[in-house]
Image (cartoon, rainbow, N blue to C red; front, top):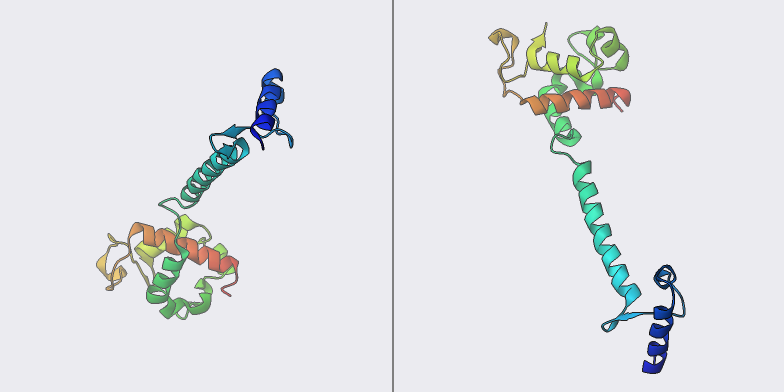
Length: 163
């Protein structure tokens, strides 16, 4: 724009009411420094959008979120010997399929947490403070969060039919 056109546009905006001056117009481009105002506004909106997305990303991944990848790795080390594919090589009626989990009262995270932590029957416990010693694994013990993640993993895989 020439300086005469810019001056005429600025005068036109000054004469309008504030609500009209704030509306975008194809004819009126207000310059802020060397940049048009819409560029400044776009940059500000972009900054707010980026900040909002960063906050959303952080809130979507809380520190206590279930880590199913890590849980699968733990399952493949600690559980798969007896529970490959969701089955149970020692007790046919105690598989990790939904029907058996339901029948045995193990169809929620808390019940699974308790049996993984303390063990039951032929299944050893994996909790840090598992007792009595003969009921617990002689292998490395699992943290509370690892057991919680395993409980979630088992329920997630059961819901998917262990496929």
